[in-house]
Length: 162
Image (cartoon, rainbow, N blue to C red; front, side, top):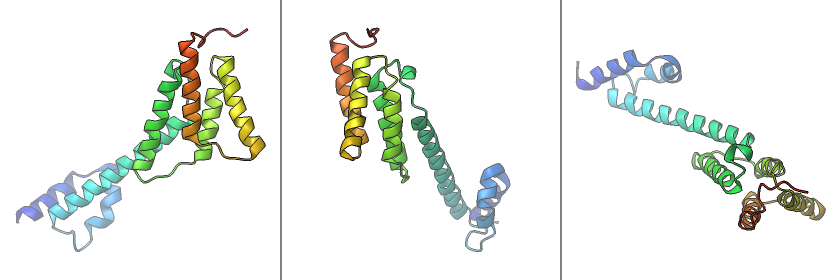
């Protein structure tokens, strides 16, 4: 038995669980039978694809359950989480809905501990509805971050509102 066939046998006997289910059809294909390097390449690509899909699912789940309080009521930290998870989604060739992201951001920002900040967020939403325009998620995050930074500098963030 040559090295290629030995590698093939080792891989076939070592693979279990979900991965075995995913590659079962490939194992029996003529071009892969007894070709260890080809099977190894296929397994590597398959595992990479599975990992990417899981990363996309995790990123989508994180975006769906955004919570400003979990980030210390820090809008910049929240926006970093949004940017990182959006990057994971797009880097893996998946798509996300700007509308869904904007809806989640608006809902999250509206729970901020500052009345002036919440007023800005409501004004942005009302303006878009009045003018029948879409809100760009990046623009929304920039405007939210700018207002947050100004309020922090003025020592107005996290103060009880009157």
